[in-house]
Image (cartoon, rainbow, N blue to C red; front, side, top):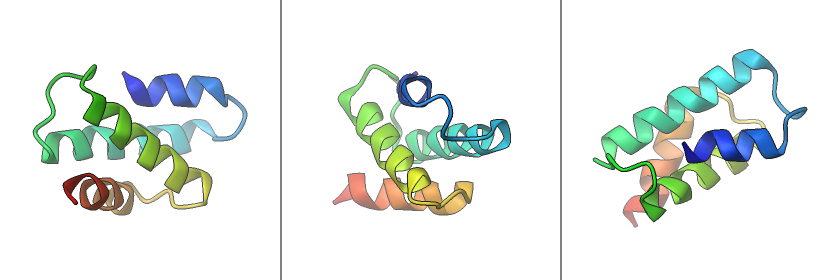
Length: 74
């Protein structure tokens, strides 16, 4: 799953409960975008958007989902 690869690359940045929120947001976003193949380039784009927003301090899963869906839908 693309989000785990990004999180694994920066293992000390997020607490375990933050990681749960980020993964939840990723799953909700790819579901909303009807992305079933986690190897689809759009899935990686969603993961990167969520990861960057989380690094900037946004950890609400619904807001993270909305940020990614809006960005990918453009």
